[in-house]
Length: 234
Image (cartoon, rainbow, N blue to C red; front, top):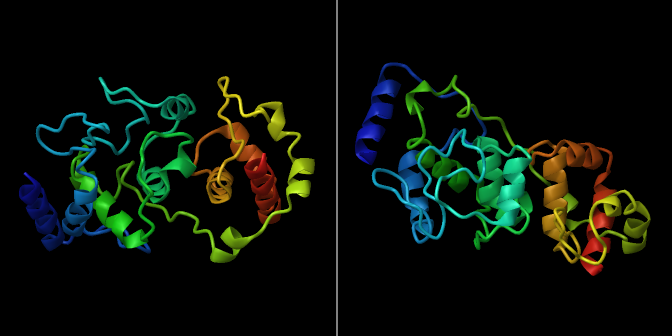
């Protein structure tokens, strides 16, 4: 089945079809099949795929988060589904890079793939098992836009916890300082890098939630670093 789909793509290319240009060139599905070997212990894809430790990944492009029938998702993933998270190239790329930064308290115990090209290859492979892969490049959700890339300088910023405490009053109208999790996810004790990546994901509208997008959009890099330092130290 996989080979047949690759042959279809090769035939489309021979007829002059080409995907739109992007920094990662959309990835290579054959290389992506090799990357997927690291995912096989939890996920299945292709003919006869079933839910295992993780949900099966057929039709993942364009699917709302937490929507595979018969699979029991974490509360974090259920919250993201209620918040409107849909799996597109952008959101899948962000999730695979750092699962816990995109979905708080996900049960996906995976550190992520930091290599951009490997992520692109994996997504090109998974896209073969979603609806109408031959409709690329026009059909959403296979349209690709480049994700914002946080510089090492931004990730290396050392925030001032005291300044973070001063800024935190708007955060703590919803998030509880004592770490309780009553409908609103706890951010107390969150690792600094995860906090920073998540806030920038909201700021760039990769992570869905209109209120958080608005809040993060007001913050500078230094203010995000300060908040990360404050909540990490609680």
